[in-house]
Length: 342
Length: 184
Figure 1 (cartoon, rainbow over the protein chains, first blue to last red):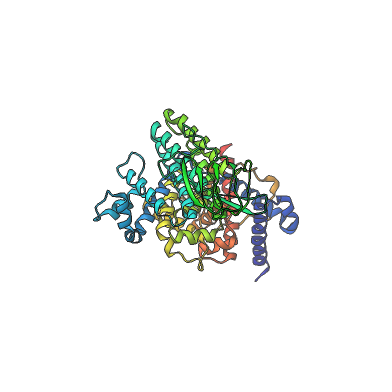
Figure 2 (tube, chains in turn blue, yellow):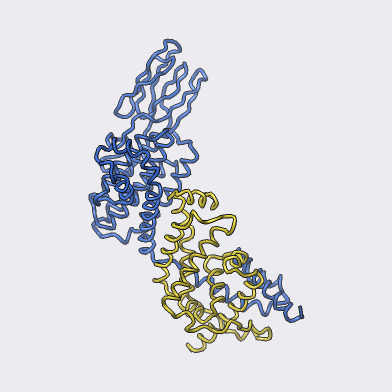
């Protein structure tokens, strides 16, 4: 390699090295000191690169971004439904029986088609029925909590759709559904561990009332736009002997449980003791926590995404849905904040 | 945020939320890459969406052992722009030659015009670069892709990409200087 070519190659390398350092935050002058032999050649080139890089920091229009995001998510869910259809058909008999509305022939296609449907569209109710069936069939409380979280996320996508369409009633109704779904995440997954006076561990898995579309949740106010995690105030008298069956009032529904060696337990709130060992505990119990790290992570991701989705369309919706959209945004901020303890 | 490999694996397993997250991570970067290459922001928006729809359909075929996910995605975006240019038939309308001399070391930097660049004149200037120069500029400035990844996407050696980067920036500087002089 002759000197000139070698020189050019070294300059190529120095330029690249300086640019990468500057991307990481190093100053131009500091880079030039390291390559002082090329300083005069490098400076104008690096200034050009800096200017071009800054100029190139563009983003799509927010309105397009929001619409594109919505369309893409819809395509994702449609695609997933289409590709998972064979698996779905294996459970079709169960689903169809639960729904009680479909003929077996062609139902798979209808189910798949419904997955991307939006409120007001023909297949939307099918989609909601499927969701309820999925909740019924959830294999574990953990699966159920994750499903509720996913449904809450789905409601936000629908709120974006209805708010952009100017549909006030549907936007408000979906906001109520959203807070209800998030409340059910909490109710299904929240766990409280307490040690009683005798040193025994009491574990509360807040899985009492499954309000799958029907029962009310204490955290949802009449407008449905506010989420308050259930305050668990517990007064318990648990004799150390006399095994028996305890009755717990959880939300509006009494739940019967096997307390192994417990006579009675009365809980005002939503916590349902799943394991109680002999002993007693009295007084208020602090708010429960969700401890499943995977669920917390999912909720965190959804909270960021959902709040961003709602914020992105704030000034893009018809004036009629301004207020309901703002209420939905406040509900999302409040509900996720409470459930994540932020 | 989950690590990218895990998201890609989940997306390959048809987890829509995983792909939705990849979409969020890369959307703006791919948009910038396309906008710089084709010089039309509105069209770049639609093309960016097309890139992700194609990626969604092809992700089961993606093999992480061969190329990083980002390189694979940019390759789809690159192909999208090639299609665009082929359909519009205006790719070479204002290209300079491939061999543009890098800046003259004897040039006095004091005499250089101060650079004032916005996206419009960057796009205008980039249109005058060669195809390869423009590719390098778009990849490097859209998302600060490392040189090794740019080399993989372009199918060139790192040395060749560094040389292209140098000639591209030198050309860009000259084009910008001429444009500023003409404006005065």
